[in-house]
Image (cartoon, rainbow, N blue to C red; front, side, top):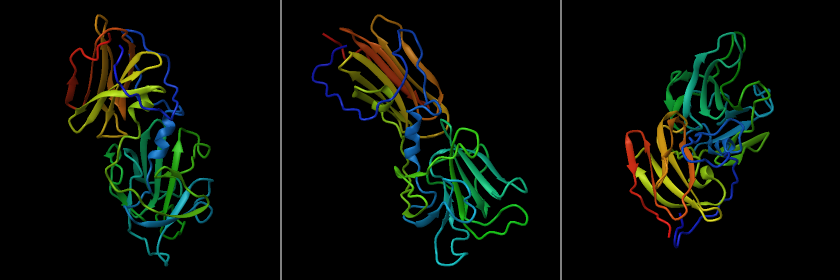
Length: 307
């Protein structure tokens, strides 16, 4: 396919997305843990407190015993933040919401799975307001600041926060990133930008890879958008569907590309952030493209024909 007058956007992030698809093959969707693509998720976290609040994090004092774990407080007295709201740093699925008893010192713990190996931990909560298996959005309240722990462990109120990637504690602890910036270890005071309206951390250019630019798109209701991209350097097309809702939680999403005269290439399943990339070359031919998110579907006619 050759596009006349198409403006191809520059791509600043090079991603290893695998070999180009051949006709009739199926793409893989959602990033693999520890892939370069999965690292994009690390920049999507926000401070685990409501928008506009200022909190001081400390990785070298009280119960934060591992390198990148953070204890958060605000106020001038020990109990000043007892009962203050704690919110999800990013969208995901609650995998633990329980009091840990004598197992460890976490007390009331909420653990959220954000996909691609990334999880966050919120410990010592006074109250837990979510249940295991529940999907949560970025900025949604999951509990309140407390001082719960194991029997005999008397602590002052604070939020113990961790980011982990993969298994093997404590080696899987990662530096916390808030609003795209790594926390200023060991101590930093930050103002929360966890203001709702969470967005997909991926762009269609990042998913399709270097050299691709968007040439067309179609809204899938409020659930997502499907994009058609083109790469001037190799003449390949790419289709990706980005979700707008249920981010971080696996849900039905699809993307397809059909070169006129060839079999349709489709990527469909329950994915956390997107379907695709679906790539194919179409020299001098028209293409159909489309996708699905939730119950919304888009199917193009044969278009964007070469000459």
